[in-house]
Length: 111
Image 1 (cartoon, one colour):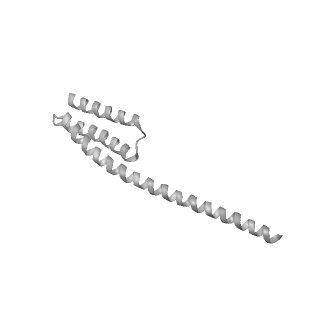
Image 2 (cartoon, rainbow, N blue to C red):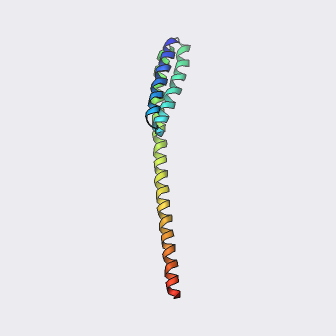
Image 3 (cartoon, rainbow, N blue to C red):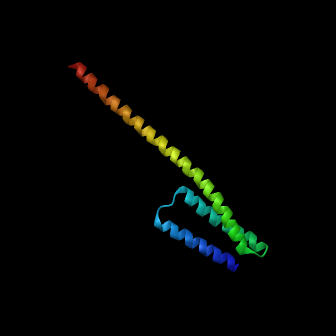
C-alpha cells in the first residue's frame, strides 16, 4: 500500500507541475487521465495479489500509453474540424464579397 501511495503522489506531482507551465494539449490530457486511471486500477489489482506498488506502476504505464493514443486521435480530429471550419469561414467571406460586388454592379447598371 505504501508503494502505491508513493507512486500515486509522484504521478500527481508530475501531472500538477506540467499543467502549470502551459495549457495541456488533448493528447497530454488523455495521457494524464489514462496514467491516473491505470495507476488506480493497477494499484487495486496489485493489492489483491500483495503488490500494489508494482500494480500501480504497471497500470500507470499502460494507462499512459493508451490515454496518449486516444488523446492523439482526438487531437487529430479537433485539428481536422478546425481546418474545415477555417475553410467554411473562407467560403462564406468569398460569398459575401461576391454578393457585395453584384450589388455594386446592379447599382451601376441602374444609372
